[in-house]
Image 1: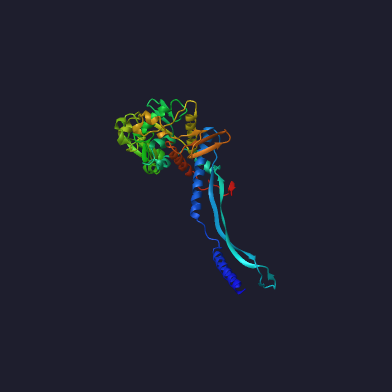
Image 2: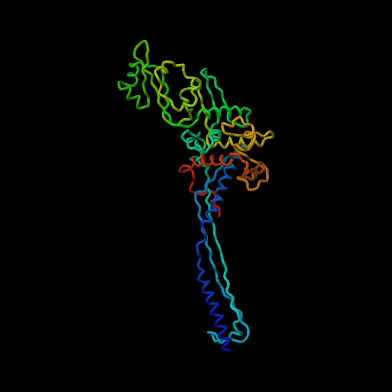
Length: 419
């Protein structure tokens, strides 16, 4: 009996020690939130890419665009261990327990065990961007001071100007206008690209300049005093106006000159001296003040260059046209090779320099972007490989759109709550 009791005691003590060890692990501990956050970041990145792609397809089918944003994320996670011990009684009896009752059979085995419970969750608030604050900026033409952020050595100029330039107009001195529209659905699109490449070679860039131009006609000093008072120079300077003396046969005369500082899309003067007679002086980036000789010759204005810029909204429209052009019965892929390869047919006919590559109803392995368009009954995808500038195009469009998210454009109350 004593031997049995000693064996039971040793077994009980061993199991109790293991139980205490497990109990020490029973408190919840912090899981690896870095892994959870990284997984969320990957999901959010794919969510944003697919939303941009979804709206490009909407634009291709002339459907309304719609945007959601995720202003906040709440996450929680826990891991808890629950220990337990089970025993098996057989054989003879044990002494009476605390209640005076005999336990039939002896304690032969004790089996410790532990259970693990893992919990983690994220709550996402999706807010709609369909409000006047967001759409006012979204529908406004992109100003040159915004475009300057995207003209650098790490983004091809062929890509950025293909996205933001909607039309090139060249006005001759006789007021006739040649127009080139950036629409790949038009047969004249290659002519637009030809003009765009010429402008890029001539140094087209957004730059801070101070341009000057004549305001009104030539005025005598008496006329200036009558209109602006005796201190007419100070009065004009407050409105950024200046005076240039003009030689006339009669009384001393002046020409009012307007100076307009700011960013503009212009051509770099020192790169194309041969074009000085064809392009107006105000289309150059480095513009010197009007000289007296230029003031004297009223008809010396040359050929004028006008660039119609896009808004973020019309960039979506343009990319929708790019999709339609390559998916039509006679596919036309918009390709934007580097300037030095403009006339390289191999470069133009491959996807290497394609602005955006979209596949319809194709089975792709791990596409870069994917959409199951329920309304049209088709699937669309951007392949992960052999997609030209597709990733860079989506990235640039995302950045243009982010610039529209000014205070008040993202509503604090969620439109959809996802748990």
